[in-house]
Amino acid sequence: MRRLWLTFAQTVTVCMAMLFVVKTLKPEWLAQFPAPATGIAEVATVHEATPGAEASRPGSFAEAAKRAVPAVVHIFTSQEVRGARHPFMNDPIFRHFFGDRFGEESQRRSGLGSGVVVSPEGYILTNFHVIDGADEIEVAHNDGRKYKARVVGSDPESDLAVLRIPADHKLPVVTFGSSDSLRVGDVVLAIGNPFGVGQTVTSGIVSALGRSHLGINTFENFIQTDAAINPGNSGGALVDANGHLIGINTAIYSQSGGSMGIGFAIPVSLAKSIMEQIVRTGSVTRGWVGIEVQEITPELAESFRLPDTQGALIAGVMRGSPADKAGIKPGDVLVQVGEKKVKDAQVMLDLIAALQPGSTSSFTLRREGRNVALNVTIGKRPRPPKE
Image 1 (tube, helix red, strand yellow):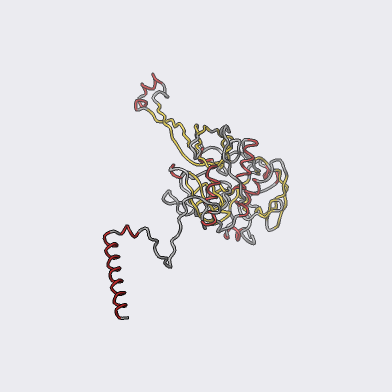
Image 2: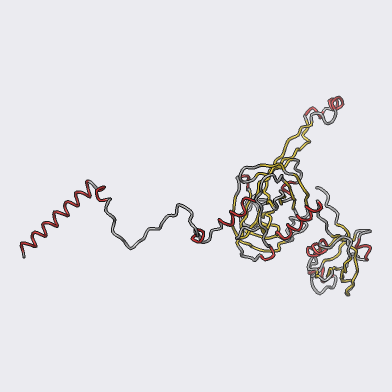
C-alpha cells in the first residue's frame, strides 16, 4: 500500500509540473478546453433587434421619439433690413444730385426655429415670432428634404402661425394628443432644432398647467415643463410618452439665454383651434367689447367695498364701443360673462374673446354695492398694430 501511494504522489507531482510548464510557455494549448462554470453569469449583449426587445428597455421613450421626430421640421427665415446709409449721404450736396435713397445699404437678417407638420396637405404649425417679418422661409425635414414655404395666416396674440409647403411627397404627420387630460408629473418630450445644431429630443415632466400672467402673449394658458427648451426650439413639438402632440414649444424663462428648466408650451387644444380658423379663413376672429380692465388688489377691493378680489375692474370704456352702447361704466366690476364666473382680468379676456362677434351675451357687473345685468352685443376684436 505504501508503494502504491508513493507512485500516485509522484504521478500527481509530474502532472502538476507539466501543467505549470504548458500554462507558462504555451497557454494557447489550454484555450480549446471550456472554462469551468462559476456562480456569476455574463450578461448577453444584444446586437440585433429582436421581437419584444422594447420590453427589455424600461424607461426608454425611443418609440415615442420615433413616431414624432419625422413630423418636426427645421424652419430657416431671412429678412432684408434696409436703412444703413453711405457716409456721403450726410453731405446735402451729394443728396441733392443723387437722391435720398442712393447709397442706402441693405443686409439680410436670418433666423431659425422649428415647426410641426400637421396634415398631409403640407400645413405646418409654428410660432408667430419664428416667421415674423420674414420675406423668405425655408423648411427642412430631418431627412434632408427642403421646401420654400408660404405663410397661410398668423395670430400674434397667441404667437401661432400656419405655413404651407408643397405636398409633392408623402409627408410625415404628427398625431394629435389631448392636452386637456395632462397632469402635473406626466412625462413629456421636447423636439426641435436648438441653436441650429440639428434635430434634438429632450425629456422632462409637466411642471405646471394653466400658466398665465407671464407677459409673453395676450392670450396665455401655458403648459410649463422642465424638458430642455432652447433658442431654435420655438415652434417645435411637445409630445407625450406615446409620441402624440400635446403642445407647441414657445418660450423659456432664462437669465442666461439657455434652458434653466422652465419652459412654456401652448396647449394643443388651443393651437389646433386657432390653426383650423387660420386654414379655413386665413385669420383668427375673437370677440371684443372695448373695455380696459385692471386686476383687483386687496386695497382696491376695500376701496370699492367688494367682498373679495374676484372679478375685473373696468378702468376705461372706449367711446362708441359695444360696452359703451350697453351702458358699462368705468368703476364697474365685471363678475360674470354669460354663465361663467370672472376670476380675474385674464379670465375675462379669454371669456370675451371666445364669444362670437354679432352675438349677444349677458354681463353681470357689480355697481355701487349691487349686481347689474346688461346685454352686450359682441364686436370683432381688432388686429393688434405691428410694433
